[in-house]
Length: 243
Ligand SMILES: [Zn+2]
Image (tube, rainbow, N blue to C red; front, side, top):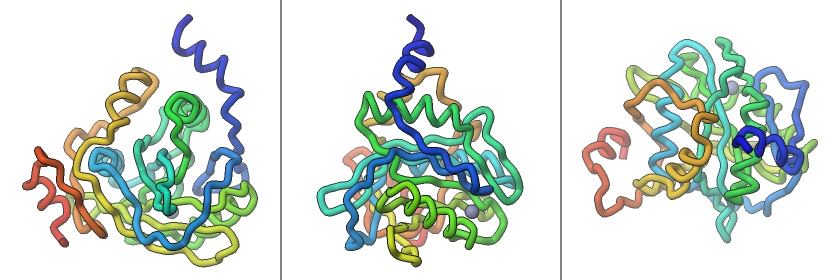
């Protein structure tokens, strides 16, 4: 049996809810509300996933692009981003909005959830050079209404921008019953996600990778970087030149 057919057999097990009414950011998520804690001021992420986002963002300097973040919540409620995906082959990229390729997300989300136990914990999209490094009012409205209607409890939205030759990614936390949203800083594990190569190999040709090969980040909002023994410190200093 081909991998593609296996995906189809199990697709019904991954219950997605698709919001049809939001122009900029369609959100697809499991109908499972994670535990809600507002004590966290940071999001844990592996370097490989920020690098991946930067490459996707740099692929599209003049139009929006985006994707989803998969991971879990640590014991005290801090989100942990383990695996990020970019746009699928049929995603709709426009100057001021982005719609993910829903079939792409369903196929990949099914595998990440069912086989690896990861949750869909957030979205990301790029405002490229629009001059807005935070959620638009439309983004905020979409997030709040999605959290309410899908009983998500909480959700992350990461907004990318391009400044010169580098990407910046800002993270924001949204909560149920709270009209505000909160900027959260990156707590970076400066090494590849343990899920990255394993899942890349599993998904194979199903994945659409960014064309840009060289990750470039700058001016990130950082709470902490945990440097691995063999980390490329020069790269980290370039990427996070504001620390
Ligand atoms: Zn936006």
